[in-house]
Image (cartoon, rainbow, N blue to C red; front, top):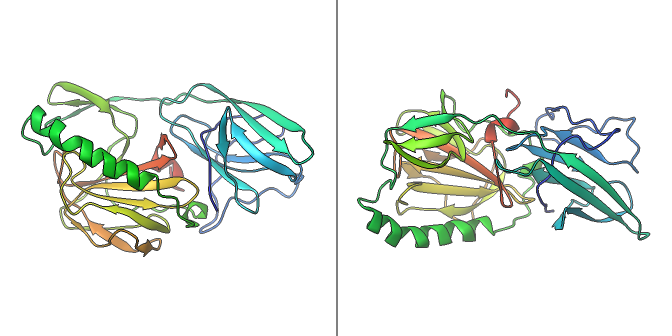
Length: 287
């Protein structure tokens, strides 16, 4: 199975885009009154959100604007909306008979805050020169890991929190590091003491386990959940899995730390769907 691109919001009259929390380990239930020849979508229609949909029977291919979107053999697809996604998009269903269905998508804006962080903007690097020298190789490893596409069905599950604790950093917030503006925060921070275990939020395949400390991410762990959806866990003190490992939801995969650019021990959980950064909190039943 696989996935696709970024999409969003109220799709039209017969589409209900209210947030539906799926049952554990299962996709959201398609209402019985929805005809299989109709489009069905369930999810949070916001910047930073993810939706699950089902293509109409007879669909040959699916596009978000000009980008192809994969769907599973049973017709399901995912679409993630970046923090800065455009407020309008178009979903195009190409049918086997040559006809097509187009739907305009309205993307609701997020509500972002400013956060001040007492940490060096270059993280574990002692200078800007050292940061620049190390960063390109780190980014190459991250991009290679994100390019991995596995057949994991973790994307079908109801995600769980990788660790309990206070949420100390919000997705989408503009970060100020010791007075210097940085990029927006691309994940959710959960405060926890060094050494506490964290678990896989869903099934997946480990695509990167950085035993060398990255400048910003520290010990970085990345997991592919299938269909283009992946998780990244930053600042760990120890990683308990290795690249290529298949992990199951709830399995201990690492321990909390403060490696890389961190003001104290915590777990940073970031998620991406293809090129779109999404808010992990929006995938949790309790959000």
